[in-house]
Image (cartoon, rainbow, N blue to C red; front, side, top):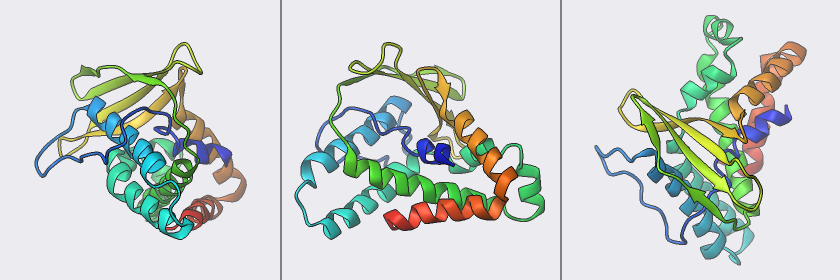
Length: 207
């Protein structure tokens, strides 16, 4: 189950300024590298502008930032299907596919709030997106920690916008790692325990 926690930290190590990031306007589609920088700016803003505020106030503001600025950058239905790919048919047959998507969203939200609280400034470089049709990759190099860097993968969602679908950290897919953890959790404990774990993560952070 630890792997589930890792998935929601996929964009937590990115650079940027301290101003509150702009989201796409109605009808506007931000390119992949701009979305990466949007998430980056959330971390910088939270680190520099919200530090020192009363804990309860800061926590509420972090939850609001995650809900407004980070959650919309990820294609949760797609990511959930990939994570639960070995169980998706059973989930749909049982009428629980939507519950799985909600559980993954809740787990992401919780971990993002926690990672915002613990964020330390790092030096990274965000490279221009490599786009092939409806797929894109943004390379992010963490100079202080690795030579090869990380890759953020996007696809075009049904509405035409770019959404994050996976991150490879030094070549290792986060979605693949989480899928393995979910497979073990479902086989050992069933869907209820897996969903319960995700809900508990969400409750720790607040919605």
